[in-house]
Length: 262
Image (cartoon, rainbow, N blue to C red):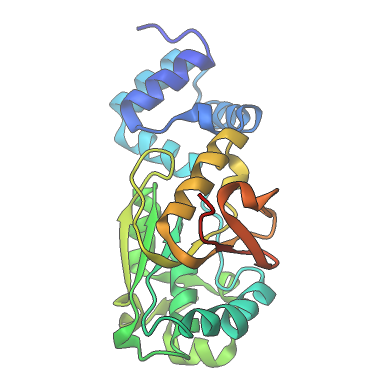
């Protein structure tokens, strides 16, 4: 098949990766892809697809670039303070243990931040975070757990001392923290979601999706949560009319699943 335009390109990308580019904001995504093509000296979509099919490194670069891995520990620290002081204590009034999913976890900063917060409520041996991302390369970095000082800016000093080991210019997350997180590959737009979650954390990802895709994902997040479970979103992702998805806002950027009226 000759790839004559972006529409054809989207079809081929879906065939080879399972990623449906039609569910991402088109102007933004097309601009990112064309920039990557130019960087690699491809002047049309057809030649770029051929390159992606035949060059594993080129394909991995494409997936990594596409999935926009920008993360840091305790991103938007005031929201993590709300999580620690209000949300988790509230969840623990009805649950002795918590099932937590860090969706689109990127290179691991978010689930490891969750472990550090939960360590104030549980021994590390009792903590298990389910963390997923579409990008295998990001997950591989997460499993290694080596981070620059820049990504640790929001981490309390006592947690840096307690949970990290300095290695040259980098900091490595300690093994007992890594053992609390189970990483696996997952496509929010395609794969089935876990069930009976007490807390789902998905932040600064859905801004890249179309409104139709976001609607579908919010509905699935709701189905994944227990009644009165919590969805924690990013600082640019407040849900408009959350009752459409069976959510109510309980704190800024935190939404609770309510009992269905049906």
